[in-house]
Length: 332
Image 1 (spheres, helix red, strand yellow):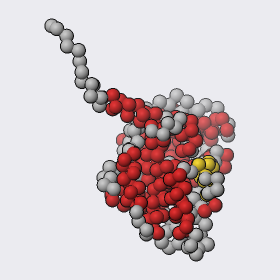
Image 2: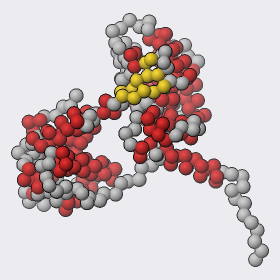
Image 3: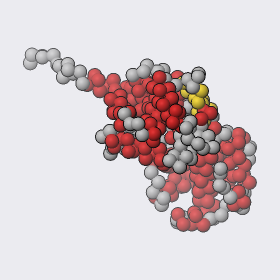
């Protein structure tokens, strides 16, 4: 649930928040991110338009925007937006990735004001040029490392570790996000049809079909889960018979990585999602559109990172050829 003090905002900002949440159906965390970015920018603009030459972070926090008007918005120029970017870099010490994200928030906000609310005729972000930092290729486990991770729980008869094995199996085979796994309910599963219903970002549902490994892990875990007397509807339970928390799942993964000798490499639950996607694309022969559907990506551009991973693997394979260093001898 969104925790926003609407009486502290001008009407146009509250209407924008409603548009993101209701019309676009974005997740609460995403809406909050857009709101915080836009609010910071509007505070900067009020101070800047009032003639403050040295705006500090404390001044931003103390500035109220509830009385900001459409006339204030009309005064915002591309030059002022670049001044804001200078403030983010110099005063807030925001890195390129954060500045890029805030630029996307401003583009979304002014696009709404000009095309949806029609409160402005001109969009000051139309010619905004902010270079996007190059995203590093995501970290992931190779096939052998994935098997080693599963092996840490494969032989245990401990109910908690049978649960943990099932969690690892779903991460590595289905490419679930952490929040998606934690949100799974018993009703999410259709064991007869061998599929499960996932509630993804923006409350968008998708169906993932279960392979033999997932079915076997789920059947073993469900035999234990059904014996637990609790009104809780969630699939994965904590030791207190409540829905397992995001942090507990992270701890399970961290411990398992350590047991498999894979600690200290910056791996996480999200890296297991990358692992599933990479293995499906590189070794499973899954095409990019199918992979997009499985992962629940809104844009194909997001999924295409895995094609770059494939290119990297292909380049390494060529460089590792035993004939890679062979050259023709030329007489001089």
